Image (cartoon, rainbow, N blue to C red; front, side, top):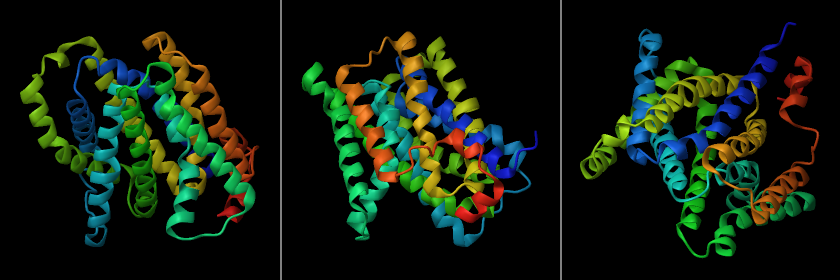
Length: 311
């Protein structure tokens, strides 16, 4: 079976999102022994070291792309990673992929608010339904455990999701210009140095004893090898051949993977409010996008000519 570059890109994005879906419960499990900034720094710095031998001969970046690269690494990756990890310390891991799944909806909201783009009534209806679903997921602690830090954790997930939108848009601009590993090496290196001051103060306050524990070791190893080196490489390759507007749909895979792992690993339960909130998010997305059949597996059956025509 000969797959086109586009079909390979689709498979890459599916695999990347399966890995990222598994990451939230595994990271939360590891964060029981290691602090968030330390985890984030080691994840990015060690990943950069692993990539260095493969990129040593192609590290050159055009001066005109340096500012984009810096913003991408610091805002789109370092801050986003930190917000995600602190969110995991404060709330259930299964909330993260559900909130992230609403990324396409928030792109629509942003275009309406910032650029005054006109849209159809069904899109507005879908946006409202999904937005209400996100609010249910974020505010569910009020109805289950009362006012606690879980809401703050959910808000951190929301901020991380907004930063991921910036990350994808900037990465789409750079991806066609350089080899994927070149981009990854630089954004990992820059992001890790951006996190270094926060990591230093965190280590000063808490020490490094937690890094010796099994949970921390497994979590960091999984994050470096799978979530960072493998998944990000697959993601960048996919961005070369898939439209930016279509990339968000692959995140629909994440919640199902996260729930499948979070229950046996962390004992997290799917509450009634979480279930209805998640359903509203997906229903709203389907209504707004108007393409309920348009999912990653369906894309694999598309012909190359159809993809080129869509682009």
